[in-house]
Amino acid sequence: MENIIILGTGCAGFTAGIYTARANLNPLILEGKQPGGQLTTTSEVENFPGFPEGVDGFSLMDQLRKQATRFGARVENAFIDKVTFNQESKTLYAGEKQFETKAVIIATGAAPRLLGIPGEMEMYGGKGVTTCATCDGAFYRDMEVVVIGGGDSACEEALFLTRFCSKVTLVHRRNELRASQIMAERTLNNEKINVVWDSGVKEILPNEDGKVTAITIENLLTGQQSQISCKGVFIAIGHVPNTKPFDGILPLDQNGYLVPEIGSQVKTEIPGVYVAGDCADHVFRQAITAAGMGCQAAIEAERWLAELK
Ligand code: NAP
Image (tube, rainbow, N blue to C red; front, side):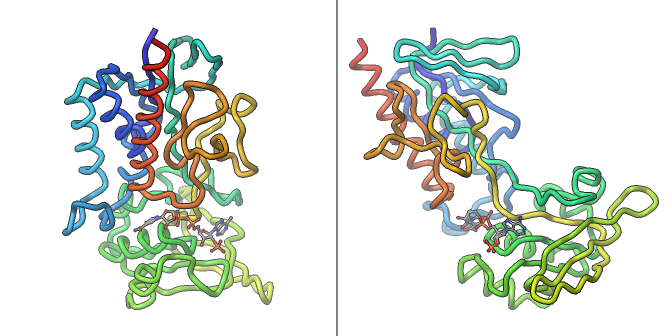
């Protein structure tokens, strides 16, 4: 039986790994479908303390991984799809494989939300629809692309894409960006970015090869529909927490976020089970707050394991 298993290799998971490894708990960190978490798909991280010039997301996660493993944390690839929890032991299932542990920190993060419109899934991944400008932006050199959304992610994607693309159209459903002021100003002041306000995307249209050729949008105030030609559609409309295996096991809010015990950010109602990062935080959702929660969860777990002995 393991002392502690940490689910997730984002900022929360690796920070929990650093703390529990330094506490000699010999943690096992299970890596899911997105090794390194969401920061590996972002470009420059400008607001993580300690990096005055910024740091690229992939490098930051690589450093966190090295820091956790340097102190003895083990990292294994396993996507957990089912769990059973009780006070004495917790069983985690990855298909046929099982893991037994005394304590667990759930830091499973969140995944990009999709629009649920015709054409989206058919052209997702390789045919023009994507949720990651850092991963796919360079494929659209000198082409026209569309970004959907009005938050920090959408602005960041749009700004990043101006490095490659001939034109970036940002389509937002309201007449005001949700993004932070600095990101909104950069976006609105960028000559390559054209913002289409008050508009929703109705469908994504393929060419004869099944690749994106245009989108149909609807002005939500007038109902008028029009088309925007583009080769790429970058969807940046927020995230959904990766909490499916815990549905019915731990309390989730209406949007699927794990709800910690009252009075704590990281403890749950099951002793020895902790939450950290974007799977349990719908308010801040920052790399640094996820890291902070990972640290809190690790310290709580360490104290609980010490009392068990
Ligand atoms: P977000 O802040 O939740 O913004 C999502 C955007 O997508 C909103 O503008 C929303 O419109 C729009 N949207 C949601 N569902 C939609 C739908 N079905 N159809 C069309 N539009 C839809 O998500 P985010 O931008 O991913 O940011 C998440 C968190 O990460 C935030 O706390 C953000 O500050 C942080 N973040 C920070 C940075 C940075 O500091 N550089 C970069 C990226 C993310 P409404 O505005 O109308 O709700």
